[in-house]
Every structure is written in structure tokens, then in C-alpha cells.
Image (cartoon, rainbow, N blue to C red; front, top):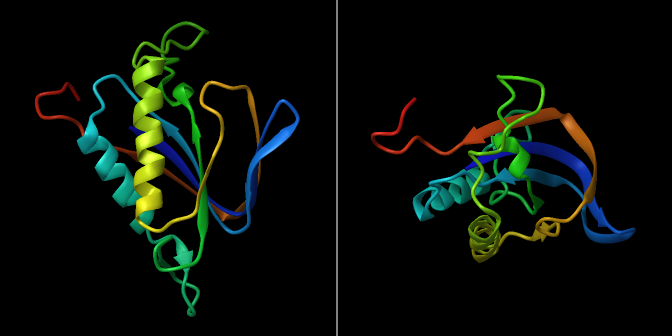
Length: 153
């Protein structure tokens, strides 16, 4: 799994002119699911998102996580994180998981974050979404679940 994690002051997702998610301070997460991603990848990503210390403490140090604060997050499905543009001019998405399985893993990730007590907004899987945000910092972190044993590096 891959994620682009942005610390935001506010964020929203709109589909067909309708606001489907909005929040104040927290994280906007663009989440991509790749071929071969498993429940182990999901568990790793959920824990990393919940416990990543990128919010400032009283001393101004990035020392607090979502679980340490009353922050919320919006998780948006983003298969294009698996776009490979090293050759040619059009990205290839062959490393992205097929949509039915990717949607299931994405939805399970959102539910696992909710089970941790976090407020989780979402987009609509596969929809043309308009994502708005005010990045705080800016702080943007790229996450990728660890490679599987025996996988090429």
C-alpha cells in the first residue's frame, strides 16, 4: 500500500457538486492499493497512520499522533499512486490492484481506523472527486508498506 499523508487545517471531498466529506484539522490521506497487498499491509498502514507523530506538541515539536489528539482524517482512494511513468509519456497502472479487491481493502482500512476511535471521512471509490485542502506546514509524508519477503526491490 502507498499513501500520501498531508497534515491539514481543513479538507473536503466533493463528488458531482455534493460535499461527501469535510473536516477541520487532521490528515488528508491519499491511499493506493497495489497488486499483492494483503491484510498485513493494511494493518501496517493503519497503525502507521494512527500513530505517525506529525502534530505539534506544546513545545512546537512534531511529537503527537492522531490518537494523541482529537484530530480527524479523510481517506481518499488513489490508484494513480501506482502510476509508473518511467517509460514513455503515459503512466502505466499495471501495479495497482484490480478495482473490486482494491475497494474492499480500502474500505477495510477505513473501518480499521474507525475501530481505533478515529473520525474517518472518505471519498467515493472510483468517482471523479474534487479534493480541497489547506496544507498545514506544509507537512506531507509518503508512506509505503514494507516489501514482501522475496519481492524484487
